[in-house]
Amino acid sequence: MIGVPERDAELQALRRHADGFDPHTLEGIRPVADATQLRAARAAAASVAVTDEVLGYLVDLARATRQSPSVQLGVSPRAATALLAAAKAWAWLGGYPAITPDHVQTMLVPTWRHRIRLRPEAMLEGVSVDAVLTSVLQQTRVPM
Image (tube, rainbow, N blue to C red):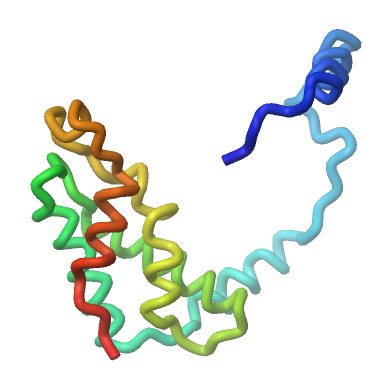
């Protein structure tokens, strides 16, 4: 989570807006990669291998969200596909030739946190989506 800036930094940002700064322009922003490089990176990440055991783990995690007593609407098969892509990208960034359960676990919460709908009574009890996902990770058998 990004915190609130110090007073001086906040004042400086407000001054820039008062002086006409438009955050919707690209002024001052420099690209770090072009479209060709981004396509190559995406293709490289997509080529990271995945075993049937890890795919089964992804499916088991998705199904566990649908069975949680705190969840009204668990993740969809499309969410499992998104987690697979995120885990592949994370593995590629780390130089791994294949995804491991650790890659899946690292990417699960940020990939799925917005894809879960809690039951109203769970929300009233203070249950969070992150807590449900952490529980799902702890209760789902990890392949060797």
